[in-house]
Image 1 (cartoon, rainbow, N blue to C red):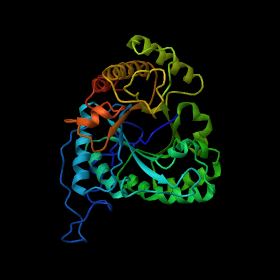
Image 2: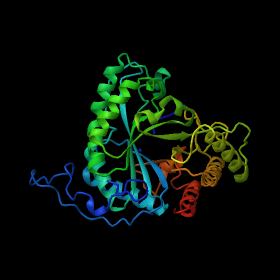
Image 3: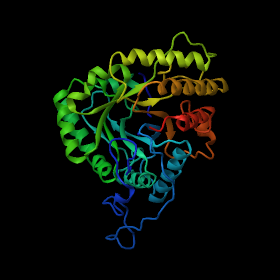
Image 4: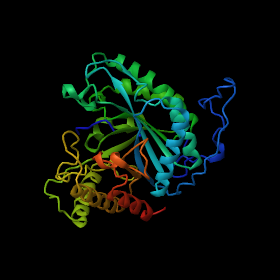
Length: 377
């Protein structure tokens, strides 16, 4: 799929259940008081409410690409986003953030102070998520800003030295794994859409072994639905989550919800013949709010500005997918996407210009209706 840059939970919704009272009041990553650098800062309670206890992951995808922000800003943004998720009847959030590489042949990766949140800032978010009993998945995502000008995607990188790339990647992931463990994240995605690196089995085994020493909950690979055989996640004792962006070539812009629902059911039925859907998480689902999107849902580049027709198409797509997904025993689904600093009460230009966001748009009501009506058990 051609893509542009896009994931402490006290978990009551999956196999890992952690009481909110078990969250450390002063974890190691918590900011310290400027007046007394050796003393932990006072943790101010934020009353967010609690997520539902459904065994399904009913989630939204959050993309955090604002880099290092003041601690107070991080806390305010996190509280606003979590409250918004709760208002949608969501109980899960996939928190994505970018990391970078020098180009498609580079053997190093690195975080950016300009765009990548620090582990400490992820920790602030996790602490607030724990108060809301929200299921959180941490999802590092290789940015394509240094790749697209050479017409590469993150699926196609070819590092000159595979071992060096993995050494660099392990170094990058380790502090985020530590904070995910301390903050009671429910899962951590160790590989997102890195299809060209899937054959490096021994390197992935070494990375998984390191990750398990640090993070003791669920580890995931995430890729486009058709690439699940590349990963064979079972051999790593890791889970698999699928990005779902099928194109329905016969669907015109005026396709009805009923027509789209049938198409989605047929698609999921065909997928179920290849692998079980019972443990499957649909990790990144959505559609651009532009004409032609039903036929080319996975297209990200050059798709144009959202239109009124496109926003209504987006809502019908969301409604249809929800109806189809309910007929299968899926583990859960996550709608793409909301930016970490977006204001749901006033989306402004962000809500109008972002082709994929549902915040402040007709599809928002489809998300809310989907989660509210989802079976609780």
